[in-house]
Image (cartoon, rainbow, N blue to C red):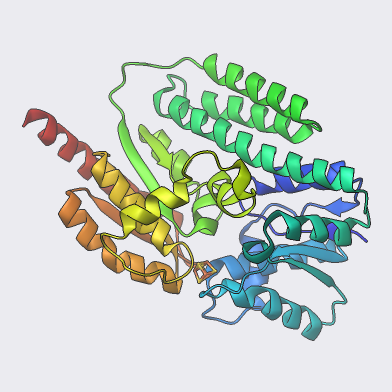
Length: 365
Ligand code: SF4
C-alpha cells in the first residue's frame, strides 16, 4: 500500500523519516502550489477553512502520483479539525477514489495511536521498528525547530541576502537524510555549523517580532506566503511561537518525559487573564503567546489566522485588548485562497515601520 500524507511546512521530513525506518512505500505529495490550492478549493465546501482546502489539494495530487492510503491527524476537538477526516473521506468517495484513510486520534491516544497507525499503514508490526520510527519522528520534529530557531537569528543579521537560507536548506537536507538518532544529531550540528559560517552583523539593531496563530498557517510557508523570510528580509528577528515540537511535546510524548513545564502549560496560564475557557483550535495558544510577547516587551506580534477559522476569530477580537493593556502592536492577518502577495507585503512593511518607530520612541524615553 503506497502511503501518503498532507503537507504542513517541513513536517514531511519528520513523517517520511519515520516511514523510511519502517521500510514503507510512501509518496510525498508535490509541494503545495497555486494549482494545489485551486484543485483543493474545487472539491471543498466554499466556506471551509483554508487548511482543509490545501490538505484536499495535496491528497488529490498524491492520488495522481499513485497514493493508495493517507495518514491523517483526527480530532474530536471543538473546531472543524474534527470534521476533516470524515469530510475528506466522503469527498474522495464521491469522486470515485478508493482510498484508505488511517486516522490518528493523537489527542486521545497519544504515542500509542501513532504506534498502531504506523503499523496499519506500513504493515510492519515489529515493535522495535515501530518504536524506532516514533523516536525518529519526534527527534526530527525537535531538531528541525532547533535549526529553524538558529536560522531566524542569522537571517535577520546576514550581510549577504539569502546566505542564511542557503545554509538552512542544506541543514534540512542533512536532517532529511539522517536515519538514526546519532545521524540526526550529527545533521543538526552540521546544519548549525553551516549557519555559523554565514557572515552577519552581530551588532545590528534588529526588531523582535513574535508570530503566533493557527498552527497550520503558522507552520506552512505556502499558506503564510513565507512570512518569516519576508520579515527576515526586512531585518526582523522572528520568534515563531507555534512550533510542531511544542505540540508533539504536549500531545505525543508520554508525561513521563515531560521534565519541565511545557510551552502549552505556560501560555495557558498567561492566557487566563484574557480568556476563561478553551474555545478550540489554537486560540488559547495565540492569546497566551501575545500576552507573553507583551510581558517580555517584544517589538510586535503577528497573529495569523485562516479565513473562517472559528477559534481564531475569537482570539482576533481579544488581541485588541492585549495590545492595549500590554502596550504592544498586534497585527492580525487573515489568510485565504484570495490573499495576494503584494498587499500582504505592504501590510507587513507598514507594521515593521510602525514597530521600528515605536521602538525608537521607547528607546528615547
Ligand atoms: S483551528 Fe481553525 S483553521 Fe484550523 S482546523 Fe480548526 S477551524 Fe479550521
